[in-house]
Image 1 (cartoon, helix red, strand yellow):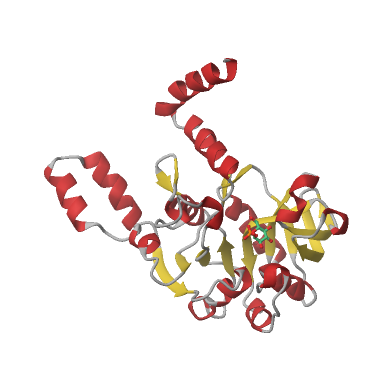
Image 2 (spheres, protein in one colour; image 1 turned 45 degrees about the vertical axis):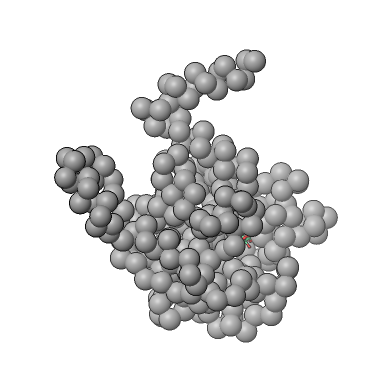
Length: 288
Ligand code: G1P
């Protein structure tokens, strides 16, 4: 299967990052100096995606604005001969083709995906949760697309999590195909530890087929009273083979305060111009 479109779900209320997310959508909060939404759009583009569909909540246009031209700023940078900065700004305007869909009420992730149905049409597509960001040898989404292409089937990202984390995620039951690759035979959204079918949790990258849309549309509210994407996946797995892939690389949860901080450090240390000072600072605080 060839996947051209990625749906990025950016309509969440961001309650886990209040008060930072009171006025600014949490997707605009930075990883070092780049909004999280840009980090994931770049991952999608590096994975071969051609069109981005942003699912937004009404009135929160900042997320889209970030990828549109900023004529005043660009003129000013041009006048002042700040060509490096101009390149940084213009890079964001040219990253991909964008389309939007709106989620008017926060009725769950499955419901958010459903809002992109028209924009996606009748073709396979990727789903990205911008709270989850990855760092590794190859973009996480590219790793999933490779599996989707060779198996000609939908696939989700998986990560083993410790017992204390199980009830935060969609947890899957699997039949292992080969190291890292599993067929999904069951799944449950945010189970209590004693009801979890494994320690393999779904992370925020999915490659899906359009036959999930009617299943989401028919879905009843699940965990937390919301239309869950995980329930849609379970229905899909009853109809066709669905895979999970334990991606290679590091994952950060930007919706969690410690995850947010470790992402700043992890990505900061990868920047040659920042790494030495950051490392020196970390040494001092850790030894005091
Ligand atoms: C969502 C999904 C869950 C998944 C998680 C990954 O939960 O519902 O299945 O494991 O993202 O980050 P949320 O973080 O929106 O509560």
